[in-house]
Image 1 (cartoon, rainbow, N blue to C red):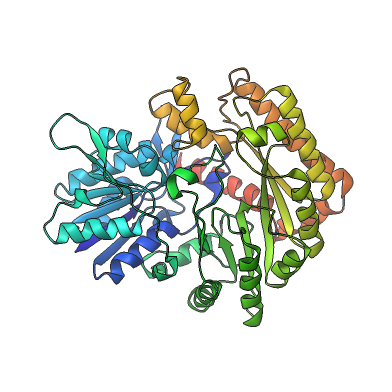
Image 2: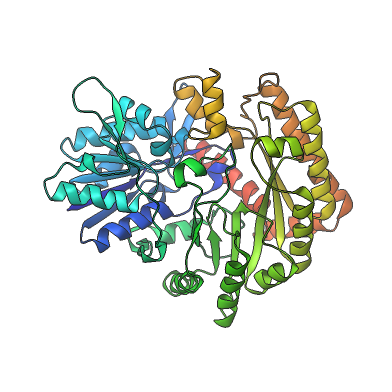
Amino acid sequence: MRVTLIQPPQLISPTNYISTIAIPPLGLAYLASSLREAGHDVTVVDGVGEGLETVWRHDESRDVWLRGLPFEEIADRAHAESSVIGIGCMFSCQWPSTRELVATLRERFPRALLILGGEHASALPERTLAESPVDLCVLGEGEETLLEVVARAEAGENPADSTGLARRAAGHDGRVERTPPRKRIRDIDAIPAPAWDLFPVESYIDYGSPHGAVRGRSMPILATRGCPYQCTFCSSPQMWTTTWIPREPKLVVDEMEWLRERYGAEDFQFEDLTAVVKRSWTLEFCREVLDRKMNVTWQLPSGTRSEAIDREVADLMFAAGCRNFAYSVESGSTETLAIIKKRIHLDKVHASARDALAAGIRLQCTFILGFPHETWRHALATYREIARCAAIGFHEMNVCAFSPLPNTEACAELQRAGKIPDGDDFLYGLFGYMDITEYRSFHPRWGDRRLRFMLYCAFALFYGLAVLMRPWRLPAELFRYARGTSQGKLGKLVRELLRNRRLRNRAS
């Protein structure tokens, strides 16, 4: 069967950290490889990668801009004989623009089966089906579900009877129903490697804007799936359940070697939800890299846990090429950590960080301000923790505003209290949690302006102390930035925000 998979254009802003990330879409690449191995003809239209420097205004009333191909051009590039069209929508802030792309595709392909997958489809399937001509929403992990849907369609059966879906109920009452949930894939090593030959990989590498620091020709990779923790602000427990499944370390390194040979990759960015969970797995992976004398670097830009990282592990990680990772601390208040179910001990984070720094790894710490329950007492505890991280020697810090992402426990609580507005403004507002000028507050007493001021103070506190306590770092980093060899996220962030501004000005 002929299947087209589409990555929609992404939101872009010259003040938003998220829009500085441009990486090949791992999820879509895994879907493409699974379909192709099952014997289907697969076409991919990467609406971002095929137009990385194409920036255009999508919504003038809200000043919304997109990076990537226009909708009509995406429809032109979809295979004319597509029976199934799958669209990925990872973030709900992308849904308003993706919804228009779906409408364009429906007009162009009136008989094709339109399927939406990704975090948004799992979070808001009822809204998605009510607002668009999407036929089916894939809930959770997509490979097995999509394969069943396509197989049923090819056999002349009803694809909507597959498990792991949201669909419109029979009749015309507009109800949405969910089929029985699909179990997580246990043997993730059996999933074929991402079909990168269908994507403009070289364009992404040349563009040079990965998730983490820029350390040469970079490719994304996954070593694990899922996360065993239940943080209330994270959608992982609902999207992936709390089952953490690692790949065989040898196979991960096999993939790294193949990516190095095929694309000249010399840096690998692990996009796992929580890569470092099991100490023995981490040690085995590092030893496998060392045994093969890979001579590459790798990073954990999404943030990781501290429990499995001590001096022995950190030394081995550095020897195997690990150069950057982030600790997701979130708060300095033990009360807040308990409420958001973070399940970390700050003293253990500090000990782990000292071990990682002593090993030579560059560290970032991340925080969140504006949880609805927070008082000034909680915020002051977070400021104290930010200062402590600066004193310990963290190289970088990021703090963002609390954002009630759909499909999270925190969002559900606010919905029950009637605090989540309807409409696209809420979805677009989710894009602002990483925007230095558009932070949105969901705190009952702290408005947008106050929360922004609190966030600016957090940045000033960390970087002010960092410069005062280790003044030699600043000129070294400025020198590397000027030469384009910055070793951290901050240098990349500044460069990409400036590039985004140039692209928008050019398109205006």
